[in-house]
Length: 273
Image 1 (cartoon, helix red, strand yellow):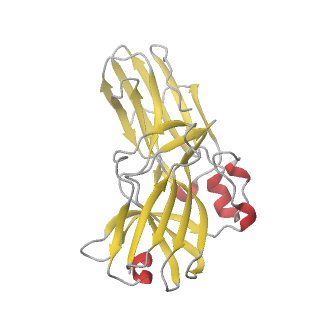
Image 2: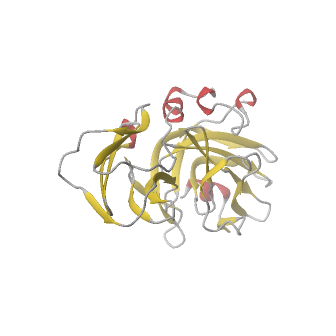
Protein backbone atom coordinates (compact mmCIF):
# COMPACT_ATOMS: atom_id res chain seq x y z
CA UNK A 1 0.00 0.00 0.00
CA UNK A 2 2.79 2.43 0.83
CA UNK A 3 5.25 1.73 -2.01
CA UNK A 4 5.97 4.03 -4.94
CA UNK A 5 4.77 2.54 -8.21
CA UNK A 6 4.36 3.46 -11.88
CA UNK A 7 0.65 3.75 -12.75
CA UNK A 8 -0.61 2.88 -16.20
CA UNK A 9 -1.89 5.78 -18.27
CA UNK A 10 -5.65 6.51 -18.21
CA UNK A 11 -6.32 3.82 -15.62
CA UNK A 12 -8.14 4.28 -12.31
CA UNK A 13 -6.66 2.84 -9.11
CA UNK A 14 -8.34 2.53 -5.72
CA UNK A 15 -7.22 2.05 -2.12
CA UNK A 16 -9.52 0.64 0.56
CA UNK A 17 -8.61 2.37 3.82
CA UNK A 18 -10.44 0.57 6.64
CA UNK A 19 -13.81 1.93 5.53
CA UNK A 20 -12.64 5.01 3.61
CA UNK A 21 -12.01 4.86 -0.15
CA UNK A 22 -9.42 6.69 -2.24
CA UNK A 23 -9.05 6.81 -6.04
CA UNK A 24 -6.24 7.99 -8.36
CA UNK A 25 -5.98 8.43 -12.15
CA UNK A 26 -3.04 9.55 -14.33
CA UNK A 27 -3.27 10.93 -17.85
CA UNK A 28 -0.01 12.45 -19.01
CA UNK A 29 0.82 15.17 -16.48
CA UNK A 30 -2.74 15.37 -15.18
CA UNK A 31 -3.51 13.50 -11.95
CA UNK A 32 -7.03 13.07 -10.58
CA UNK A 33 -7.96 12.08 -7.04
CA UNK A 34 -11.12 11.41 -5.10
CA UNK A 35 -11.61 10.56 -1.42
CA UNK A 36 -14.65 9.20 0.37
CA UNK A 37 -13.89 9.72 4.05
CA UNK A 38 -15.75 8.22 7.02
CA UNK A 39 -16.16 9.14 10.71
CA UNK A 40 -13.34 7.64 12.76
CA UNK A 41 -15.84 5.69 14.89
CA UNK A 42 -17.04 3.78 11.80
CA UNK A 43 -13.65 2.33 10.96
CA UNK A 44 -13.49 -1.34 9.90
CA UNK A 45 -10.59 -3.72 9.34
CA UNK A 46 -10.15 -3.67 5.55
CA UNK A 47 -7.08 -2.04 4.00
CA UNK A 48 -5.50 -2.87 0.65
CA UNK A 49 -4.46 -1.32 -2.65
CA UNK A 50 -3.64 -0.09 -5.16
CA UNK A 51 -6.23 -2.08 -7.09
CA UNK A 52 -7.63 -1.56 -10.59
CA UNK A 53 -10.98 0.19 -10.24
CA UNK A 54 -13.92 1.64 -12.11
CA UNK A 55 -14.07 5.45 -12.27
CA UNK A 56 -15.62 7.01 -9.16
CA UNK A 57 -18.54 9.41 -9.28
CA UNK A 58 -17.83 12.82 -10.84
CA UNK A 59 -18.35 14.84 -7.65
CA UNK A 60 -15.47 16.38 -5.68
CA UNK A 61 -12.59 15.24 -7.90
CA UNK A 62 -9.26 16.99 -7.22
CA UNK A 63 -6.84 17.65 -10.08
CA UNK A 64 -3.08 18.24 -9.96
CA UNK A 65 -0.71 18.89 -12.89
CA UNK A 66 2.86 17.66 -12.48
CA UNK A 67 5.47 15.67 -14.39
CA UNK A 68 6.36 12.37 -12.76
CA UNK A 69 6.44 8.61 -13.39
CA UNK A 70 6.16 7.00 -9.96
CA UNK A 71 3.74 7.96 -7.21
CA UNK A 72 3.17 6.67 -3.69
CA UNK A 73 0.50 6.93 -1.02
CA UNK A 74 2.41 8.18 2.04
CA UNK A 75 1.18 8.52 5.65
CA UNK A 76 1.93 11.52 7.87
CA UNK A 77 0.85 12.47 11.39
CA UNK A 78 -1.74 15.18 11.93
CA UNK A 79 -0.44 18.75 11.93
CA UNK A 80 -2.28 19.35 15.21
CA UNK A 81 -1.97 17.16 18.34
CA UNK A 82 -4.13 14.13 19.07
CA UNK A 83 -6.00 13.85 22.37
CA UNK A 84 -7.28 10.63 23.96
CA UNK A 85 -9.06 9.91 27.25
CA UNK A 86 -8.60 7.14 29.81
CA UNK A 87 -11.35 4.53 30.07
CA UNK A 88 -10.90 4.51 33.86
CA UNK A 89 -9.13 6.89 36.21
CA UNK A 90 -5.44 5.99 36.10
CA UNK A 91 -3.25 7.03 39.03
CA UNK A 92 0.51 6.71 38.59
CA UNK A 93 2.38 6.74 41.90
CA UNK A 94 5.76 8.49 42.33
CA UNK A 95 8.53 6.52 40.65
CA UNK A 96 6.12 4.40 38.59
CA UNK A 97 5.18 4.36 34.89
CA UNK A 98 2.21 3.26 32.77
CA UNK A 99 2.24 1.92 29.19
CA UNK A 100 -0.45 2.34 26.55
CA UNK A 101 -0.87 1.40 22.86
CA UNK A 102 -3.25 3.38 20.64
CA UNK A 103 -3.93 3.87 16.92
CA UNK A 104 -3.84 7.35 15.38
CA UNK A 105 -5.53 8.49 12.13
CA UNK A 106 -2.98 9.75 9.58
CA UNK A 107 -3.02 12.45 6.98
CA UNK A 108 -2.43 10.75 3.61
CA UNK A 109 -0.58 12.28 0.70
CA UNK A 110 0.00 11.19 -2.87
CA UNK A 111 3.64 12.08 -3.48
CA UNK A 112 6.00 11.75 -6.43
CA UNK A 113 9.42 10.20 -5.80
CA UNK A 114 10.84 13.73 -5.88
CA UNK A 115 8.74 14.58 -2.80
CA UNK A 116 6.23 16.71 -4.74
CA UNK A 117 2.82 16.53 -3.05
CA UNK A 118 -0.04 15.99 -5.49
CA UNK A 119 -2.92 15.48 -3.07
CA UNK A 120 -3.45 15.54 0.71
CA UNK A 121 -6.49 14.48 2.71
CA UNK A 122 -7.65 12.91 5.98
CA UNK A 123 -9.62 9.67 5.38
CA UNK A 124 -11.11 9.68 8.89
CA UNK A 125 -13.23 12.54 10.22
CA UNK A 126 -12.60 13.40 13.87
CA UNK A 127 -13.96 16.25 16.03
CA UNK A 128 -11.64 18.84 17.54
CA UNK A 129 -11.34 19.96 21.14
CA UNK A 130 -9.22 22.35 23.21
CA UNK A 131 -6.44 21.00 25.44
CA UNK A 132 -4.91 23.16 28.18
CA UNK A 133 -5.65 26.68 29.41
CA UNK A 134 -7.04 29.46 27.24
CA UNK A 135 -3.71 31.16 26.63
CA UNK A 136 -1.21 28.32 26.15
CA UNK A 137 -3.46 25.42 25.17
CA UNK A 138 -3.74 23.69 21.80
CA UNK A 139 -6.51 22.73 19.41
CA UNK A 140 -6.44 18.92 19.14
CA UNK A 141 -8.10 16.08 17.27
CA UNK A 142 -10.35 14.30 19.77
CA UNK A 143 -10.13 10.54 19.25
CA UNK A 144 -12.80 8.07 20.43
CA UNK A 145 -10.07 5.77 21.78
CA UNK A 146 -10.05 4.90 25.47
CA UNK A 147 -6.67 4.56 27.12
CA UNK A 148 -6.19 1.31 29.00
CA UNK A 149 -2.83 0.61 30.72
CA UNK A 150 -1.04 -2.52 29.57
CA UNK A 151 -0.02 -5.25 31.97
CA UNK A 152 3.56 -6.47 32.14
CA UNK A 153 2.62 -9.44 29.93
CA UNK A 154 1.61 -7.14 27.08
CA UNK A 155 4.71 -4.92 27.07
CA UNK A 156 6.04 -6.31 23.83
CA UNK A 157 8.70 -4.74 21.66
CA UNK A 158 6.50 -3.16 18.96
CA UNK A 159 9.33 -3.25 16.45
CA UNK A 160 9.64 -7.04 16.75
CA UNK A 161 6.07 -8.20 17.36
CA UNK A 162 2.72 -8.30 15.66
CA UNK A 163 0.93 -5.26 17.11
CA UNK A 164 -2.47 -6.72 16.26
CA UNK A 165 -1.87 -9.65 18.61
CA UNK A 166 -1.39 -7.55 21.73
CA UNK A 167 -3.88 -8.10 24.53
CA UNK A 168 -6.20 -5.11 24.74
CA UNK A 169 -9.80 -4.15 25.21
CA UNK A 170 -12.11 -5.02 22.32
CA UNK A 171 -12.47 -1.43 21.16
CA UNK A 172 -8.75 -0.78 21.20
CA UNK A 173 -8.14 -4.04 19.35
CA UNK A 174 -10.52 -2.88 16.61
CA UNK A 175 -8.34 0.14 15.87
CA UNK A 176 -5.07 -1.75 16.32
CA UNK A 177 -6.11 -4.23 13.62
CA UNK A 178 -6.28 -1.47 10.98
CA UNK A 179 -3.28 -1.02 8.65
CA UNK A 180 -4.19 2.54 7.61
CA UNK A 181 -3.80 3.82 11.20
CA UNK A 182 -0.54 4.69 12.97
CA UNK A 183 0.12 2.35 15.90
CA UNK A 184 1.68 4.31 18.75
CA UNK A 185 3.21 3.22 22.09
CA UNK A 186 2.94 5.69 24.97
CA UNK A 187 4.89 5.60 28.24
CA UNK A 188 3.91 7.94 31.09
CA UNK A 189 6.59 8.24 33.78
CA UNK A 190 6.06 9.92 37.12
CA UNK A 191 9.36 11.21 38.46
CA UNK A 192 7.67 13.68 40.78
CA UNK A 193 6.81 13.26 44.46
CA UNK A 194 3.06 13.47 43.82
CA UNK A 195 0.50 11.06 42.41
CA UNK A 196 -0.13 11.66 38.71
CA UNK A 197 -3.80 11.26 37.74
CA UNK A 198 -4.19 10.53 34.04
CA UNK A 199 -7.56 11.46 32.53
CA UNK A 200 -6.54 12.72 29.08
CA UNK A 201 -3.31 12.71 27.10
CA UNK A 202 -2.31 15.11 24.33
CA UNK A 203 0.15 13.62 21.81
CA UNK A 204 2.21 16.26 20.04
CA UNK A 205 3.38 15.00 16.65
CA UNK A 206 6.00 17.46 15.39
CA UNK A 207 8.76 15.12 16.61
CA UNK A 208 7.09 11.89 15.43
CA UNK A 209 8.65 9.63 12.82
CA UNK A 210 6.52 6.96 11.10
CA UNK A 211 7.86 3.54 10.11
CA UNK A 212 6.36 0.37 8.74
CA UNK A 213 6.55 -3.36 9.41
CA UNK A 214 5.13 -4.98 6.27
CA UNK A 215 1.86 -3.04 5.87
CA UNK A 216 1.58 -1.92 9.52
CA UNK A 217 2.36 1.72 10.35
CA UNK A 218 4.07 2.48 13.66
CA UNK A 219 5.47 5.62 15.24
CA UNK A 220 8.28 6.39 17.64
CA UNK A 221 7.47 5.59 21.26
CA UNK A 222 5.99 8.65 22.97
CA UNK A 223 7.44 9.15 26.46
CA UNK A 224 5.66 11.66 28.72
CA UNK A 225 7.56 12.50 31.90
CA UNK A 226 6.34 14.41 34.95
CA UNK A 227 9.47 15.97 36.43
CA UNK A 228 10.42 17.07 39.92
CA UNK A 229 10.51 20.71 38.78
CA UNK A 230 6.77 20.87 38.02
CA UNK A 231 7.14 20.25 34.28
CA UNK A 232 5.45 17.80 31.96
CA UNK A 233 7.53 16.91 28.92
CA UNK A 234 7.15 14.80 25.79
CA UNK A 235 10.03 12.92 24.21
CA UNK A 236 10.06 10.63 21.16
CA UNK A 237 12.15 7.46 21.51
CA UNK A 238 13.31 5.77 18.30
CA UNK A 239 15.32 2.96 19.93
CA UNK A 240 14.46 -0.34 18.26
CA UNK A 241 13.20 1.29 15.06
CA UNK A 242 16.54 2.10 13.41
CA UNK A 243 16.39 -0.76 10.90
CA UNK A 244 12.79 -0.16 9.85
CA UNK A 245 11.73 1.65 6.68
CA UNK A 246 10.93 5.25 7.58
CA UNK A 247 7.88 6.64 5.74
CA UNK A 248 7.70 10.03 7.48
CA UNK A 249 10.61 12.02 8.90
CA UNK A 250 9.91 14.42 11.77
CA UNK A 251 10.29 18.03 10.67
CA UNK A 252 12.18 18.96 13.84
CA UNK A 253 14.29 15.87 14.37
CA UNK A 254 17.13 17.95 15.87
CA UNK A 255 14.94 18.78 18.87
CA UNK A 256 14.45 15.88 21.26
CA UNK A 257 12.07 17.28 23.82
CA UNK A 258 8.91 19.40 23.93
CA UNK A 259 7.75 21.21 27.06
CA UNK A 260 3.95 20.92 27.28
CA UNK A 261 3.22 23.06 30.33
CA UNK A 262 4.88 24.33 33.49
CA UNK A 263 3.88 25.81 36.81
CA UNK A 264 0.47 24.12 37.07
CA UNK A 265 -0.44 21.00 39.08
CA UNK A 266 0.14 17.69 37.32
CA UNK A 267 -3.57 16.90 37.33
CA UNK A 268 -4.41 20.17 35.59
CA UNK A 269 -1.54 19.62 33.14
CA UNK A 270 -2.45 16.18 31.97
CA UNK A 271 -6.24 16.60 32.20
CA UNK A 272 -6.18 19.86 30.26
CA UNK A 273 -8.32 21.66 32.86
